Length: 515
Image: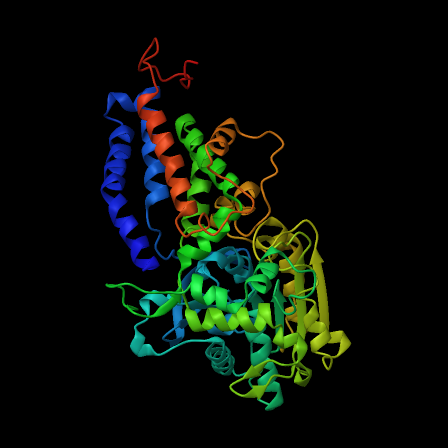
């Protein structure tokens, strides 16, 4: 029933959202005299904040249309080259002669199946496109996969990875971001044990929870304290009609998003208050960065219940892989079998999702990989999001990955200066501020040196409350309704608070409210 109540709440707010969107268009119309007044700007800003905090965000698009190769702009198109019910393999095809494309290494980005869509790695794709043939796993939303397609658990995930590796016939390097590090390591272990010729040339594991007993974070401790049964009884529900996956048992994306936002709600409230201020001042660039970040961050997908619960149980509760107890369809997984695949692990110094040392534990398991085929790098001043996106990723991590790939690739062509990996102008334009990217994957409470007055006011009213709560307060609608309260407050502030000032209609200076 939880999912049904969630859908009902969205339906109930829809008329107000439509009215707010109409109000935004009305007050932004250049032919409307009110558009050029302080009242009009505040009303338009309030309407937009309300509409954005109550809408449903669909699956984003990659929107990668071009890249730069050898100093020349090259068109990029997406091509589906492999497909199963729960995953598509996308190839970002650069408009180059086939012979020229064949000179660059093949790089498979395994996107995390943990609530967000593969587009979260858009910046990662754009960073590597100039010098690599890039592919990515595009995991499908479980609520849109009919029951007739069957179930999907961690064992199926491993089988998908083995099939994808065989598609490349051994000519590929694998970059697994966070969650897929475990199934990728399992798949390669099984293939090595079988002497499968289609094993990848190298595997790069970034922020992967290989051994969550090492330097445990809040996420790890929560899983161990609650246990698998708690998650089964409290976060698993059924997809409602009329979704294609009607009746499928899932871990809803909105629950995971609620958890992320509740743990750091003050900063999200402040970000939306700042959006309101940017819109009033006409700061279009800052407002657009906010829109781009939250269009991606608030778009979430459902996970099948069996995959989620099996992952929680084997990886976070029982730690079966590092203990040597991991099984795949009744067969024990032995990472010691890996000997031909080069290994690189990457961690962030300030990662509060996967603690430092958890991913590096892969080196302790893969003891038969030669020493000259191993690399470990801890990037300073970087959190979970920063190990695969952002300026430090482009400057410090991506060049190391590119060099590692070249060192273990069959091709002989090398780049003169890997540190100067080009990034498309479109990506640079869309670069998000550190304040927004810090919200992507962080459970750390806000620590602002100069707290925003509006945030303090909201906290006094019980909004943005952090810390321990009892089970009655910790529910799926907690964070969304607090965000809705903020949107409503800004809406009323924009429409009702304003006395008309002298010089009503002037446009030279931004109008400041009368105190």
